[in-house]
Image: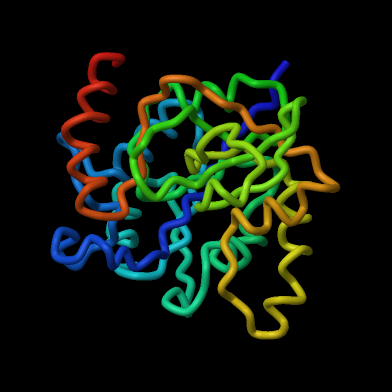
Length: 246
């Protein structure tokens, strides 16, 4: 029996500077692909799959997310006041008292098929990092896992890994125990004023003592949108693929 999860945390504080004018001065989660923005699509899919508590960690353009909250009773927004000078883990750190129990952790600039959520919610494992096979999309985060699927390391440079098991999708299922360990891992760094730590760093940092299962899904339709090329690929390749599977 899988444990029911009703909470999702979406990390949405980033500047998205590589998208330039395409953002129209909005957070990159508000980029529209098809008839919906990335963030609205994600919220719709989460709600459809039983998520009734959606916590947004905001920063740049936080007012846009606050406005979105007005039409979704499931949403709460919490701003990282130093979003321009901190990494995604600090945004998650600020939300530590808002999350109780297991949750889904997502990035806000993702376009993904609904099956990505099913792969996490229907799996009995408590801690799962979703990965895909090779996308050749550019700017990949490569993942290395052990023979039994446990996370070992991640890097944007595949040469730093002994081998590549998959590519990080940016959607994970995390237990409250693992979230606590991630917070403990970064406490001393934050106390010393080092806020430039990403949540991926914390996952790798606790991986030796915590079994984080890397679930590699072949032919998953998804992409992250960080730049102009990513957006073009999203609209011409990924979204049409998703539509054929709906």
